[in-house]
Image (cartoon, rainbow, N blue to C red; front, side, top):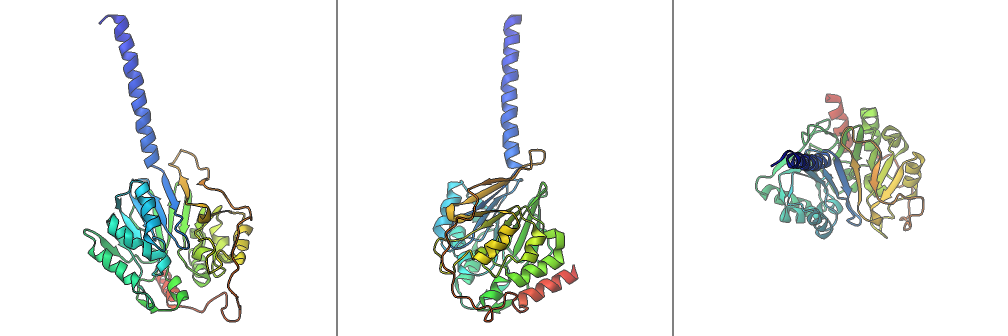
Length: 331
């Protein structure tokens, strides 16, 4: 090979190596970002998160198995590292039954809330116990979950002592609340926690609630998203998981008015699965949300008749609230 051909060959090799390096860098950068998907499951909740280290998280599964199954299969998922049940209401746990039947689940995170009016939640727990190589965890308030060394994942509410009730408010307030913090941004997932727990969290964690992205509690119910709580969170983006023409009238106008007053953009799963990306460090910090923000044009169903005297906005202290206060005192 003469000098001219050797030089040309060397240039081609450099181009090939540069291309391979670019591909490798692109793949590494993609893995180093955090992706969150708020799945359209109708009137229910399901949030899927891809962590920078390549592991994944599913928080709740919606009211039926097909939507979350199709979403996960569409993404090529075969294994889920961490499955979370925020609380035992069927619009959160039913879809998880299909998940345990169809996917390899490694860890299950649960509260000790027992819904006396349901059997399906215990069926799900039996599936988790029967899943090969799956461990069940009951993380405590204040715990940091070791899912990715680059992401701080903190438990801000849960019931780790048994609570047995048929009262929906009591069960809602046992919701496991998780905050994911990465590269200067946080995602706060509220489950169905209501006003009393929100306001207790605001007093206990203070600026530790501050989050760019807020997964709104209780599908936009008027009993959640209080002014005090929102003032601590200071969200720039709010995501509401809700079903069209639901019998609860979610989201309620009162809650939407409070959220809009913060200046946050609101996204609904009514229009389809919503997703967001927190980029890797030094890759930008702009808000990246895929979806159409609400500009006040959402069509809401009429909410059920509401009597403030029958149900005060600030509900009485519950077992969940007492556990939260005790856990905070210990910390």
